[in-house]
Length: 150
Image (cartoon, rainbow, N blue to C red; front, side, top):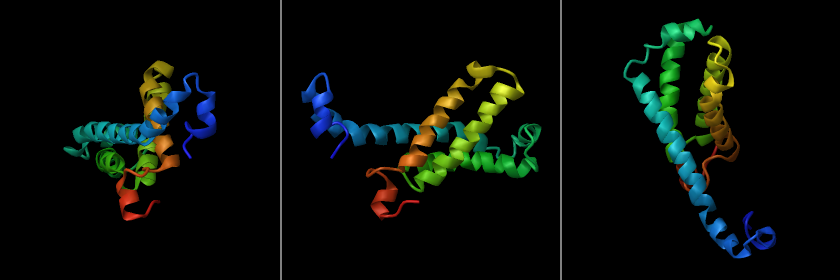
């Protein structure tokens, strides 16, 4: 039973749309996961070409040794983004990406004092990844194809 069919379609202003919403539900979730993963991969592709390039920056945030955390940051964004996009190990990849984004929230909001306006985009992306930490990859994912989810 879908959230927009049967009993709840009676609560819609236009009940006939319940079937359409139910049909598009998985497709919309899959598209959001793919877009989030692709965008994270694109963002990480700038770092993966020089995986130690952010060492000084991460040490400035208190993460030592900088070379280790810079490498982890690069891999989390690039490879984690690919995993999220295809739905492989979706929950742990989304959790790692969400952690990175929450660090960027701290960096923009507190460290450089931009407040909400500087952290807004990272907060939005962290919320999207939290959704996939909770929900997983859905039926259109590699996790579903192999019959295993974290």
